Picture 1 (cartoon, rainbow, N blue to C red):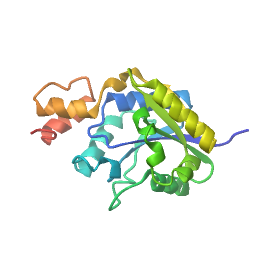
Picture 2 (picture 1 turned 90 degrees about the vertical axis):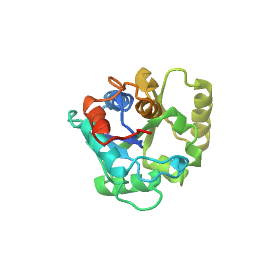
Picture 3 (picture 1 turned 180 degrees about the vertical axis):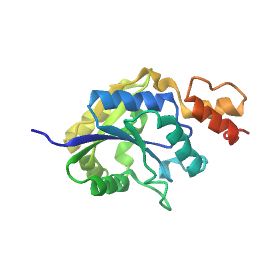
Picture 4 (picture 1 turned 120 degrees about the vertical axis):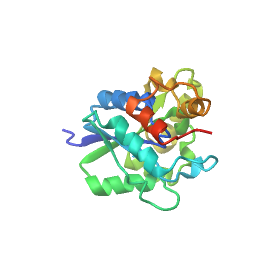
Length: 205
C-alpha cells in the first residue's frame, strides 16, 4: 500500500496570477488526488532575465489574494527569500527536507516549459525528486510535446503526466498588455488581484 501523501507544487512567476493558473492547479489536484497545492512564486529565474519581472512582494501578495479562499491551496515564499538565481532543483530539495520522505511531489508547469526542461539545472536529479505534470493550452503543438515526453521516458525512464486545461488560453503577458493599454482585465483573474493591480499601479506604461 502506498502511504505517500501527494502534494502539488505550482511554480511560476505569477506576474500576475490569473484564473488559468488557478483552474490548472485545481484540475491537477483533483486528477491526482493531491492533499494540497503549494503555489511557489519564482524568485529570480535565469530563463526570465530577458524581461523585467514585477517586484517579489507584489507577485507574492497577488498570489496570496488569489488563493486565500481555497483551503486546498497554500503559498510559499521559499524562492522569494533567496538572493541570486533560483533553480527548481534546489527548491525541490528544500521541500524534500522540510516535508520528509513520506511526501510525493507533483510539479505543475506549462507544456511550453516542459519542452525546455532538459535545459534545467541538474535535470537528472530533478526528475528523481518529483513527478512533472505538463498542462497544455488550446492550440499547443502536441506533436512536439509528445516527442519530448517520449524522449524523456526513453532516456530517463521517467513519465511526465499531461493534463489539458482549456482556460490556459489566459496569459499573464496578455493581462499586462491589456493593463498597459487601458483595456479591461475583469474575469481574467480574481477581483482582489485586479484591485491590487489598480491600487499599486502595476503594469502601467
